[in-house]
Structure formats: structure tokens, C-alpha cells
Image (cartoon, rainbow, N blue to C red; front, side, top):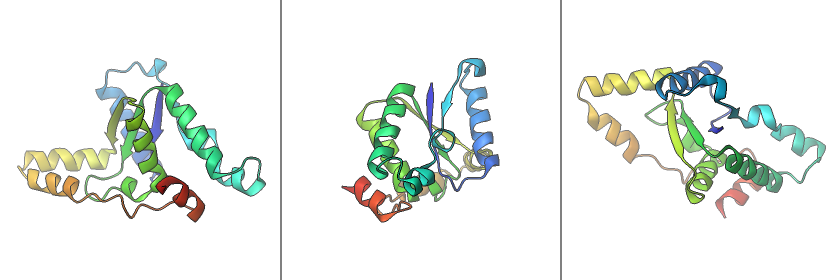
Length: 154
């Protein structure tokens, strides 16, 4: 039911806490929620090493088909200020496709990021949040391989 867009660099704690909080806060019945995560569904390294598929092009097609089938995307952020997500080209591509296909998207936060957000709001430091959003820059996002990056950025 949901495609999770996330970074392999995230800790398991951040991933689990974000998903748990989302399930609790979204009134989703966890028994009816199914998450698609590339980590569990397609081994990107094996695909390239074994040449079982053509690599980047297939990963793009695999991603798009799973996103469309899921029908909803969760963007998982590890931080509010300088989130790792915006440094990864595949993550930016996933968000782009989701937006272009008009698929519903929710941003979910790790427990640390959510705590930071609410503490910043509580102390009236909204400027910290607006500055964090205002300084996001995806132009320097990178992929694991140059071929992937070229494919994504064209």
C-alpha cells in the first residue's frame, strides 16, 4: 500500500521509529499496511554484479512500477536540518516521479527529527525550520554510480 523512499545510510532505529510513528499518527490499521522498500525487494548491488538485468535502466523501471502499484509514497527523513535524503539522487528521483505521477506523498520523520521539530516549535524558533527548508539544495545529490547519476539527472 505504501512505497517507502529512504536512504540506505539511515540507521535501523531511524527507519523503525519513523514508520512506527507514522502508523500511530495516521490512524492506519497496521494489519492492512504493506510497505515496499527496495532493500527487501531488489538487491541493487547483485543486479549490477551478476548482470542479471541491465542495471540502472531496469532499476528505474522496477522503481516506477512498484511506486505506481503501491499508490502512495512515504518520504522518510532522518533530520530536519540537512537531511541525508536530499543528498541522494535516487531519493530525489523517487520524489520527482511521485510528484509527476500525482501519487499521494507523506513525509515521515525519525523520532530524533520529530523531537527536534516539536522542540523547535515549542521554543518559538520557527526561523530554524524555515531556514532548514529554505537552504535545501538537491543540485549536488549523488548516486552510487556515475551511470545512475547521469540517467537520473538527464
